[in-house]
Image (cartoon, rainbow, N blue to C red; front, side, top):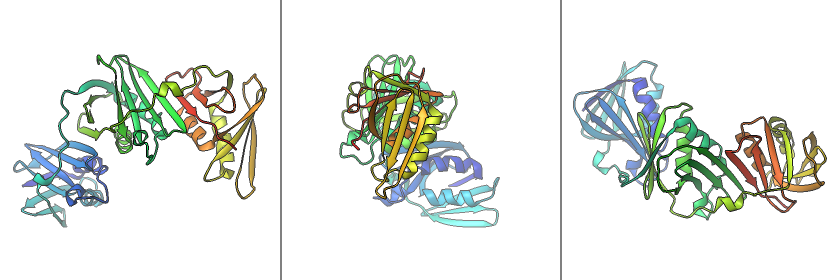
Length: 366
């Protein structure tokens, strides 16, 4: 089998599918990408058994066939070739010879029959959404996912589909990020699934800021997204996500409004001297004034004051400064509202006039 293509034609789909290939594998075949030629269409597949990425591109070929080649080596070879280079891949038995200009490389192949396939999704729930909307939902919540938590259902992002809304929620038990958009999904029953961390990360990288619709299929064990030349499939986490609506404070009484960028800059400056492990920050609120302070084990301290819109009782509360900065970075509006109940309960952070996203942060004892 002989495949001929321009460098750029091969490189982009190779980069897409190679992103899911782990550097350390349980099986040699998982280090490879599957190349399948049908007519003038080359389909490339990469998987780690949890996430599968399939990309297509047009090439010239003398016959149909399937083979697997080392994913990262093939991608790195394409990267090192000059722009506009013509690449020829000749596959004979257990060897693939790659030629471009005066360059020649030989790679070892493995048979395509050994390559794992993710099972087809039977009777999926299906709907469509503009790419930029799904990308925004992911970006506004993914940072709150847990990392290697024993509560495995927290190590991912919850995706909820109702007839009128698409919602994403992530939590690590100390904070929660919620984002929702209104849209006619066409589904009849509501559905909640948990997409694992790696799947969320790959999706965030894959989706573009454009109006091109993406088809989303949700089965019993998998979620699949179909784009014009790429198909993404991920296993789902089997578990029940916490009731996020119980976590979001319903009507906290103390409300502070402040410029988002100014508050972020204040936190960014004082964070330099925060405790690297615990990241504790003390907030002291009084009429139209917020005082933020941190200290660390070296007895170093930072304190800064900022004018805010607040009319209420004086009180102080402790938070993880990193959690607060993550929430402020995700909000897009100029001003933010931070609502408190008291020093023992979670606060609610959201953009002013930005109802679709909310962030809940639990207090710390300092």
